[in-house]
Image (cartoon, one colour):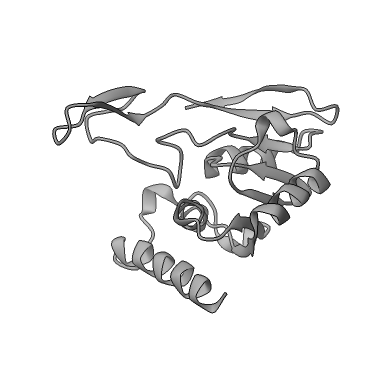
Length: 178
């Protein structure tokens, strides 16, 4: 368990130093005291989960990561009432809402601003290009497929995806398109 925690901490530090220990001004939307803490439940190890947590921190959120086993994650998702069809790898809670998957910080900020009657937000699966799961090319601003020069196969670098708002009855609607 300590090795996992050390790995998660090391990845977080590498991510912080990649920005020179500073948050780019263009990504900071609010200050940490204005925002509630995000409680992130992640299977271990999950580097993409750590990267997503760093994405949230860069937008002013305080994030606490709690490692879970795969079995614990399944029980947690059922307890929080995440619809099975919307599941992703990680689950978080913030201000009474669940956040399922790689939801962009901007979508969470909008949720907290509007405070709709809802269970939470979800980005099902692991779409490439979502925060914490970036595999983008500098010239790829929309969903695209790039040719991998090493093996000749095409490789999706960024997928178009939707953030879904989950209503109290479990129905969904598109909250944001990415």
